[in-house]
Image (cartoon, rainbow, N blue to C red; front, side, top):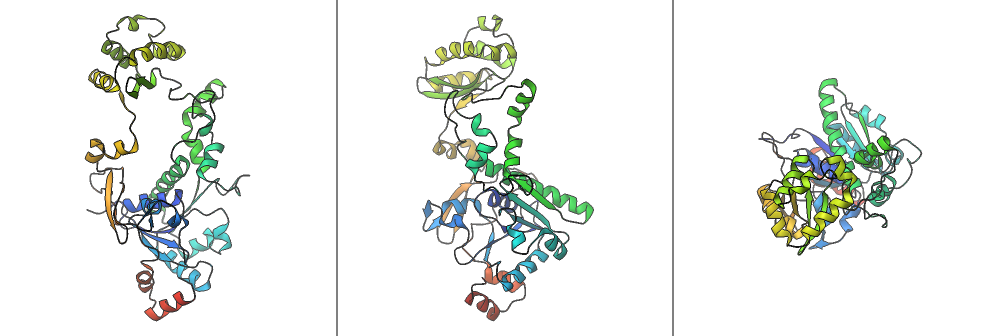
Length: 394
């Protein structure tokens, strides 16, 4: 069996999170990904803690399965080598600020002349058009601009950042999706294309429910804590042994909840009879069930509610997540053997495919570990490669 993209070669000029996450997905799908880093230090994330035997865990978690070369894109010989690689590859992914590639002399127009079939994906904070084009953007900035911080947290509390870099990851996901779609389009049309992926745009797209509610009601959504704006009960409840989650999204599930608690009278209460009424009377819902769930441990409630087909569950910490039997059954933690860090564990590919399964293609690369072999494939002799290295071209 081969991967979905096993015949695809990707040039990876990315750093930090959104771009490397995109190209890691492509690698897991079977693409050959060649990561280009600037000599002598390489990607900035190689210096990001924590470290395992001197290797950044952050870098390793985003760059598994890739080859790596160092290449000075500002030198004439570096530019020449880069254009040779462009001619031999299917995809280029970069997440520089808009204009950086143009200043290096690598406009999309020029690269598409070198390789008309090239799919070029540019991931940036705000995209290549619009008044915010030049603004710098990290996840926190985009979470603020994109509105997610305005709806996250407790009512009346200070704005809260989502606990992981959702803006970067969304852009990486959309980037990978765009690349695979563009490759399919290339099969039909014979030409590649330019893909402009904005972290801000992706965050706006992820705000679908809040935006839909605003246009429907004219009211500006705010933070609701753990509560859902259109479903009740749908939140975390406190038990004797801590919090657990519960949702009764349908009238049937609410009826099951009432039966589980031996409270059939709640089903007949007109204030709770329909989904709309329960949302309208959410304070009453919280008062009734909050008192009940405080009386016993969460383990009791989860077992009881699951038995009555009411969706619920624990609030796991990271240790509990990675040790979950479901995570084990789904193969969601993978282990790779790194040349210096030894055995390294990380989250695996989440897509399960019957014919072309996703798989980790190998460990994260050391800085420039494939430089000599890649240049040799392009026809350079060992003497020429040594000369490149002597002057800092690689």
